[in-house]
Image 1: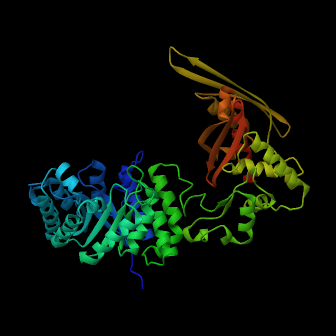
Image 2 (image 1 turned 45 degrees about the vertical axis):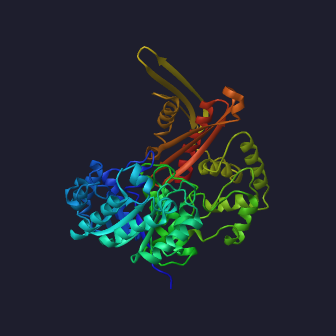
Image 3 (image 1 turned 30 degrees about the horizontal axis):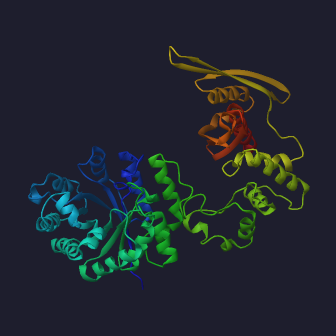
Length: 523
C-alpha cells in the first residue's frame, strides 16, 4: 500500500511573492477556510513580523474553526551568534500561537559563507538551536532545508549534516527545497532517496518552477519516498512560480494512486482554483492543466467529433473528476460535429443535414477570416446560430444609427464623450443621447437609456471586461481591430465580439450583441 501524502500549501506566504499578487487579511482568512474544507493538511499563513498583514492574519486565524487543516507560521533560524531566545523574529514565531512552525535554514555553503557570512559550524548550530528552542516551547517544527539540492550538489556531506542538525533539534519533518528551481528530475530523485533513507523523520519536497519542472520534480520526490509536498494553488510564487498543487494533487490521486486526505473532495479542485483567482483579483489562467477552462476544450473538427463519440479518445481523464467540463470551441476549423456539440451545449437542437447548418458554417468561416473570433464569445455565437436556425425575426431592437463625439480640453486635461443612439423597438423610435469619459461607456449609457423602459432587466447586467486586439498589425493604423466584451448578470457571464477597421464600430458590435444576448437568454 502506498504512503499517505500530506499537502502543505504555501499560497498565503510564498504565493504572495508572485509579481502582481496581494492578499488582504480577510482574503487570506477566507482562503484558509476554503483550503480546509477541501482537505489541505497544512496551511502556511505567512511570516510573522515581515508585514502587518501577516501579523493580522495570525491574530484572526486563532478564531477560525478549521475542521482539518493545521496553520503554520513561517520564519528562519536564529541569526548568527545570537541565542534563539534573544532573536526577535524567533519570538514572533512563538507569539503567532500556531501548533506548527516552519523554519528555513541554509544548506548550501555558498549561502553560509557569502550570504549570511558565518561559519559552517555556526550555521549547523543555528539550525539545531532554533528547532530545539521552538520544540521546547511546545511547537511542532517542520524544517525547510533551503537550497538543499544545490547545496547537496556542491557538498553532499555538509548538506546531510544540516538535515541531521534539524532532526537532532527535534524537527518532525524535513522538507527539501529546490529554491532556485534548476534541479533535474533524476538528480532530485536520487538526492531525496538518500535523505529518506537516512533522516529518520518524514521528508517533504518544495519545488520551484524556473525550469518548468516543478510538478514533475514534486512527483519524483514522492516516488523517491517523500510524504509531504509543498506548493501553491495555481502555481503562484516568486519568479516563475512554485509547484502547482492544482496539478500535483490530481496526478497523485488519479494517476499514481496515492492516498490524500483531500481525495474525497477532488471534484471541488477547479472551484478552489477559481476562488483563489477571485480573492487575488487575477484573471484565471485558462490553460492550467486539469482546472483551466481550456483543459478539456476541443477546437479542431476531428477532435471534437471523436470526443463526442468516445470521451477518452481526446481527454486523459473525466473532466468532472476535478470539477471541470468538456467544451467545444467553434472557429473556422470547425465542422458540423463541432457546431452540433456547441449548439447542444446551449440547449439548441440542430439537424446535421439541414441546409441552414451549412450556411451557418460558411458564414462563420467568412466572419473569422474577417477578424471575428467566437471561442470566448459565446453570446455572439449564440446570436449568430439563432439567426440561421430561427426563421422568424427575433431581434429585440433594430439599430438605425449611432454617433460618437469625443472632445478633449487640454488645458483642463478632461476628456468628454457624447454618444447618440437611434433604435427601433416594436415599431417605435428611441433616440437617446448620453455622456461619459470614454466613447464605449457613452455608447453603453445611451443604449441603456434607449432600452431601459421596454426592457428593465438590463439594469442587472454589467460590462466586466473589454479587450482590444489588432489583427494584421503590419497594416498599422488601418489594421482590423477585434474587440471582445465580457458581461455578467446574476445568472452568469457571457462574451461577445466585434471586428472592424474602426475601433468604435468593433466596440459597438460587441456591445450591441451583449445586450441582445441578455434579452434573448432571459426569454
